[in-house]
Amino acid sequence: MDMIKAGGLGLVAVLLALQLKEIKSSYAVYLILGAGLVLSCWIVGRMGVIVGMLEKIESYVPIDTSYLAVILKMLGITFLADLCAALCKDGGYGSVAGQIQMFAKLTILSMSMPILLALVETIGDLV
Amino acid sequence: MDMSVNLIFRIAAVGILVSVLSQVLKHSGRDDMAFLSSLAGLLLVLFWILPYILDLFETVQTMFSL
Image: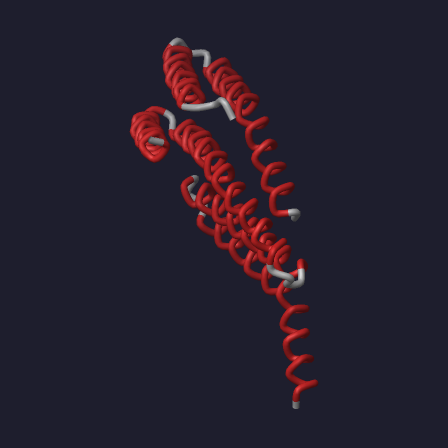
């Protein structure tokens, strides 16, 4: 049922935005921004369920909590970067979207460096 | 989050009304008023959307402990 609601909302927003695009294109972008926000609020709600489940699983399995935290951070960064970049691309400015994507990739890469270091060190100890 | 389709319809309504208003003002020779009316429409829509943007970013921040 929720899927029908989300799909319906997206379609209604796109059809209205098409109408608005001829009259005043700036309002089409605001409309799509509003629809994107509503949909991403629902997405965040669903992600909350998954994150809760992950934390529950993590309490059973004695793995290091820092790795799960880094993975969750990466998940959040990709979600936000994708939302903002897509909205910028809709607004017609692909360059800003590209820069947002580049910044997100570099942030994730910089976050994963310590884990890579830990891996290399463990390998070094084995040899 | 209680919001649903009505946010979309409100933005669409403001968009259509402002564009009609600015067309009328433009044809009656008051171009500056037309610009001001579209600016007012923009501010109104932003006032509606900003709390949702803030709320979304806070939720993501707390959930992923960014």
